[in-house]
Amino acid sequence: MKTYHIWTIGCQYNVADSRRLAEGLGKLGYASTRRAEDADIVVLNTCVVRQSAEDKVLGRLSSLKPLKKKRPEALIAVMGCLVDDILALKQTFPYVDAFLKPSDVEGLIEFVKGHCPSAADLQPPISNIQYPISCYVPIIEGCNRFCTYCIVRLRRGRERSRPVDEIMEEVKCLVQRGAREIVLLGQNVDAYGHDLPGQPDLADLLIAVHGIEDLWRIRFLTSHPADMRERIIDAVARLPKVCEHIEIPVQSGDDAVLKRMVRGYTVDQYRRLVARIRERIPGVSLATDVIVGFPGENEEQFKNTYRFLEEIRFDVVHVAAYSPRPGVAASRLPDDVPQDEKERRRRLIEELQEDIAGEINQQLLGETVEVLVEEKHRGKWKGRTRTHKLVFFEDTPPLSPPTLGGMKGRRGKLAQVKITWAGPWSMQGELA
Ligand code: SAM
Ligand code: SF4
Image (cartoon, rainbow, N blue to C red; front, side, top):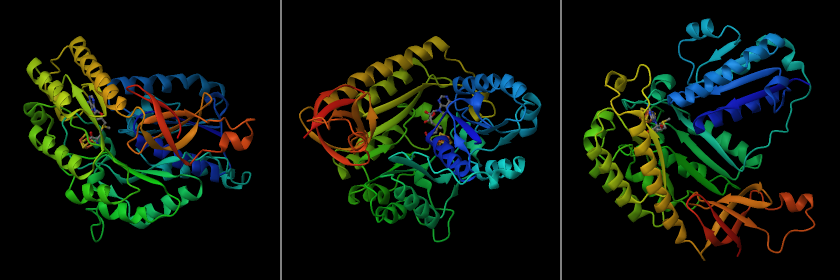
């Protein structure tokens, strides 16, 4: 049997693309294999958002050279945000058979068909792909914004929205295969639809997807503070399946830094947006991204970010040290915050956030929350609340003996769980 191995790093977009690729290769009769060394096709789905991600990708790529030497018939393909200048990449990595632009899953499938003419006549399609309970569905590719630190917009191009019908088909198909939660994806999901006939927006799409039977929950990410319109906030407030969780990167809590980042809003505009969201969607959880050590960020500007995070009290903060990327506008500014200072600022924010998240989650102690169960993990059920908090719980009384039914029993179901322990990153509970 022919096999494939997909290695994925980076954002949810790459996870979604790798899932679509696995599906396509399954249709050609390929089965997944855990070790790259055993695979007939090895795909690296790459990310270069920061130098650290790019280093991991280059390390993984180099590790495939001996594999190709040993088994020249194995195909090696690279896709994702590493892929920019294909000619230059081919010269640097001659042992790679194909480079494909981010999200070009169809191109990769065509390449496989072309290089393995018998692919379509292989064994019957493999249908053993285990679909996750929560599936990512890209709705808009690319980004029209100009954040000066960002390489993603350069690699993924201008915005292209997928038609509502196409998205609906994909979601229905995933639900038929067991998905119960859908996460609609875009680099700027709030920009959805402006390039489509009739200009449907994200709120229209949420309403349409909401009508799909047997789908329990809907999420979307990532929102842009300058593009999050009332209609979207309203849709979250009104539609029961749309979860009270919004990912809305602030990046900095200082106006001068935001301006140099060309984010398109001020701290005060962001503050007012959060107030409107919290007013309209009670109990909403908010996640954000922050970059520390952006060119020219002084101690006072960093403190402004720190104080802003203390003020807003996000549920989740993803913090990253600024990493200069080739070709982006900020690469023309001096990278003048020393690495150890960036690291110090990053750690300070992580420590602050650990306290805040711990305190927020403590408020759920003794409360009963609805958990969508995703899988079993070390003997416990693992799932998430509507607000995207991770919860582990045991069956009480245990579903014993641990029959197949017991193992699979709660997967994809909604459980009412009473929280008995709460930490900053996860919670434990028991069936209510
Ligand atoms: N489109 C989203 C947005 O508007 O924030 C996400 C884009 S990016 C793929 C994900 C996160 O990576 C960003 O929110 C930012 O915090 C971080 N990031 C992007 N470029 C970076 C850089 N050059 N250095 C450090 N972090 C970066
Ligand atoms: Fe990059 Fe900004 Fe677009 Fe996000 S909104 S992808 S950070 S340019």
